[in-house]
Length: 264
Image (cartoon, rainbow, N blue to C red; front, side, top):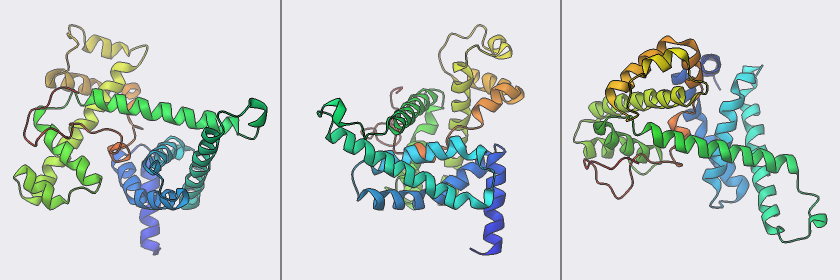
């Protein structure tokens, strides 16, 4: 790694730890291929590779703020990867012997099993949260987001994405980024509304709301979230959508581009 590249990485880490979403997304995007390759090789290409990668990246996001030495990010990341691979293998062995008597299964690490269960629960929560956030985006954002999901999964190139949208590549990039920004805002709305007890300022903001997601109420709620340190802080550490693209698609695959999908 060149000194310039190293300085850029440290700058990204510092910004990500401070809550910069763009830096966090860039960091995850840069290291996702390495994590995926390592997990795939460590597990021998089993079908659960994607699940292990997702759990690994969620753990990285949860623990990043606690990293005291940013220069050790890579070995720290790889240690998490190998721990998750080991946890998966342990789960596999436990599944193989689940019919064995309890006193014959004492070698299964209880802490590792509990940790894996917690991570799976968090991943399920993120899936539900993304599904609910999708109800807040504009109809015109659905096709760009679904195509971007496919691009992130390696099923489309940016040129193919642009062609599907009927736009030039630069214009398609702008369109996707605008839709992604609205998705981030929608996720922030869901996080704020889910907080118990609800912020007093937010309670006042949504007074009279009929509970139906819509662009007007999204704007009002986002305006409050951005002006409220507590509400804004809660949404600052949401995992970037790239981490979840294999978990949830905003549109079902049977929908055609340009069709108006039903609310998920």
